[in-house]
Length: 476
Image 1 (spheres, rainbow, N blue to C red):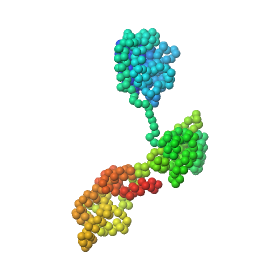
Image 2 (image 1 turned 180 degrees about the horizontal axis):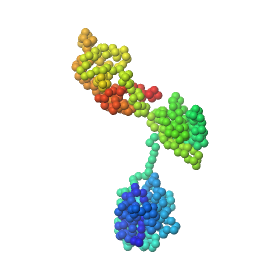
Image 3 (image 1 turned 120 degrees about the vertical axis):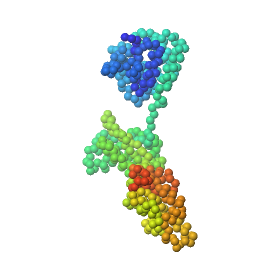
Image 4 (image 1 turned 135 degrees about the vertical axis):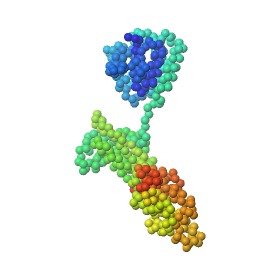
């Protein structure tokens, strides 16, 4: 057997930290110590074609010390804990376990043990001094690793270098999480959930809604969710019905469609079925609209409950509404078929009379392939006629054509051609509004397959339709 073995137990994602520790040990032991690091091919590790656990057991049994690299508590440390357990088995030779704490916490199993805080220079220096000078650092009476005295300047120099190397590879910042949207956890007794499941299909929905409202209770939540209901914080064991009564006091006229949607989602989840999401808006105390969405379900047999994580997502009716559901389809559009060069056949007074009769304020012109040509607004046509009328050219008014308008006012041609926006068929009303606002004086958005102006038109929406949908979400 060569020199004493030190086993570095770590997650392979923390390989850089393990390598920094191994490099320090190898350099300052002058080759007297062997280091087992499974994540680095240049270090001692499991041999090819051998069973991994057998190789690990052999190394752990032989190790004089195991250095446990512990970073963040969100990782699965099961394998590292197994390695520490094998190394410290009562029947194995004595093995020291040295915990390198590389994050905000240390493993609970070693909570009472002095460990190395890799983020603190003093803690790292204490480890280095003991490693290099303490004769009992390793069991079995191996003696000090080096011949340096405790006060030798080389020790402080080595400690500074190790600390700097560790600092360069340690994870930055603590584990942090927070709900991006208001969050409430509702809890339902498993027996209550079973009652819902056992109810006949014809009555299940009504009974489920009534039961969930009266028996589902708040088991967790954040202040954001509490504020939506006008509460400083959510009180645990508050029933959904009680929570809704607080909300109702401030929103006496608002629809409870959101509550029906929520209870329906919970009822389906209680049956272990995927919830059906129906976007129903709930006015919050901040004046905004939110939609409750059940995102996670968990069964806790030991407590006899089901828990439902509910997030309240900002409700934007425009973003939630497909443009195809609100557009005027091509077959229902009032428009004129026109090819390039045929503008002389369109009499403006006749067009204005037709707009008046149909109560429209604009008329799109499309080619025979349904591709966009122009969008003419009544106000511009009226201005052209008025200009001729004020000049006393009344006898020629009935003969004025679109060609005359485009010839006499070339800038109008550009306006007619460039004042429309385009979106693809999978877009939402929100996309249509954004496309419209990107263009000057745009009040019309045409829908095509992929949103290109040289494609056949599938339908169109106007600024008025978008505004109406935004103001009256219930009608969308």
